Image 1 (cartoon, rainbow, N blue to C red):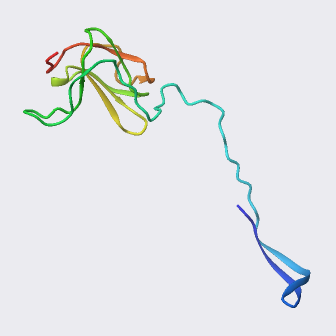
Image 2 (image 1 turned 180 degrees about the vertical axis):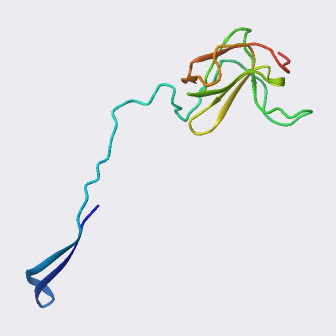
Length: 149
């Protein structure tokens, strides 16, 4: 932060232009302070969210988000039974278990507070509280819960 001083000076002007300045006295009102800004060299942990998402598996979308005879709160992607399901972004597993129509479900909460759900799995490879990185295998594809696949 910049300091502040009260200055008593005699200034001479000729035709509106300053031609001389004599400092008679100065009184420091506030001392300048040095601000130390810590800049780390440590890389973000691999499990930190990047803010962008990747597809958890390659496949065709077989069911879209939205209303029909029942409301569908996600998208379904076709996959071979047992295929690797990967985390769309880094974060913390906040749920891993069986949950009604989702079947075997993994929920990852990302650093910005958003959550991604991975349902209908045949098996889960992570547990609640675990930190995961983007692209890490978290489950194997299946058809548990309310699934037509």
